Each structure stands twice: as C-alpha cells, then as structure tokens.
Amino acid sequence: MSSSPSEHKFQIRLIEARDDPALAAIIRTVMPEFGAGGKGFAIHDPEVDGMSQAYSPSRCDYFVVEREGRVEGGGGVAPLEGGDADTCELRKMYFLPSLRGLGAGRALMQQCLDRARKFDFHRCYIETLTGMDAAAALYRKSGFSPIAAPLGNTGHGGCNRFYLMDLAPPTHHQAG
Image (tube, rainbow, N blue to C red):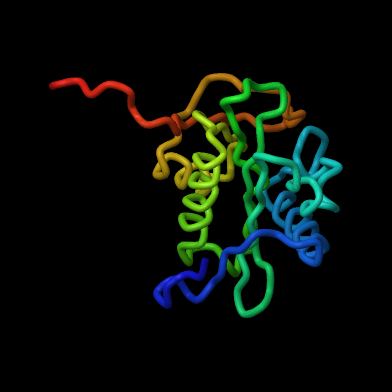
C-alpha cells in the first residue's frame, strides 16, 4: 500500500502495537491545535493509548501513514457506537502538519472507505468541529454530505459538524 512518488513517498499500512505511542502523541498534538482538547473530544477516549488493540475486533481497522520511517498520521473505521449494524464511523483521522497537503488525506480516506465496503457497511459517518475546515473539505470531496444532527453514541459532545456517506451501490438506475 505505498503511494506514488508524486505523493511525497508516504506509506499507508495497518497499525501495529509499536505504533501506539506515536499515534497517541499525534492525537494529543493535533487536537488541541484545533481547540479540541477539552471534555467531549476524542483526545480523552480510553483507546488513544492503545489504538492497535482498540481496532483489533472484527469490522475494525486502523491505518497509519508513515513517511521516512516515521508515523505522521492515521485514521480508521469501526462500527458506529450506538448505531445500526450497517453504519461505520470514520475515526481518529489526524495528521501532523508535516503530512498535510501531500495527498495523504485523500489516499487514507480511500483506504478507509474501501475497507468499510469490504466489511459490508452501507453508510459511513464522521463528526468533526468548526475550524477543521481542511478536513471538512476532504469529507465533502470524498462524497460525504452534511447532516443536521449526530448519529450514534460516540461520546464526543464537543463536535458540531456531522457527515454521512452512502457506501452501498445504487440499487436502481433512473433515467433522466
């Protein structure tokens, strides 16, 4: 799962236990940068210190983005807590500033959505907050649509932007 040379030679791979400390540090660095350090944000989730274990159950995967042998970001998919069985959540997609603008977000998003389809999810949900504008733009470009209210029970009351994407192929083709 390597990127092309035009994408600044980053690699996307499944998380391993050895990546846990680097990923926890990334999450704890990036979230406060966007004002997401307080209560109600993912930075306080128990899984932050053990991401490889948290994404080991079935229908869960977490990927890291590595550049020059250093983990600089990551993101994953898992069933939406408190949601229906057909809905997954794109979770904890965070990049250090050194990785931003290199095409890694688009590549990682595609990897996560492909995995969600492989796991037979029909919808993918994501939540974020005002100020994470580049992330919101990536979500929209990837096919997510804004929705008015949160889904499931993520425990992230600090988030105020919610998106949903239909992953299932269309069942009917309408003539226009």
